[in-house]
Amino acid sequence: MAGAIGSTAASCIFCDIATKSSSNTLLHSDDRVVAFRDINPSAFRHYLVVPVEHIPTVKDLQRKTEDYSLVSHMLEVGRVLLLRDAPQSKMYRFGFHQPPLNSVNHLHLHCLALPYTPKWRCIKYLSFGPLGFIEAEKFLEKIKPLPTIHSKVTFFQ
Image (tube, rainbow, N blue to C red; front, top):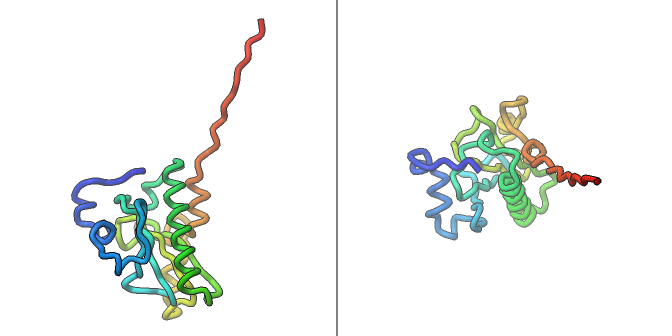
């Protein structure tokens, strides 16, 4: 993973939350991620799942097993929380804002139990190709590690 160390991480609000929050402000915490309520919710339930390690944006993730595993874990945590806290919702969305449309330079998964509140907030979660919002499942496809091919060479004498 491409974690940035230094002044960016030192002044990052999500790094502060991940490392200094009391357990009553967090919905979930483990050694890889934390989850908490969005302070400006766009839906009936709106949670953010962020890695503890400072990773600026989706553009810093690659087709590597550790990156794929992290995003898969983030998605699983978000799903569990929304199914627990908003089982009555008929639709859920999970995804990331891509630069330059991301609001905080620390990777964060938006977990939304719809409907949007107010309804016009849906605009923030539209996809504009390489810009805008990318669904978590689609992003996972993008960073899924390529299978390694092990070839066995046999020499005959």
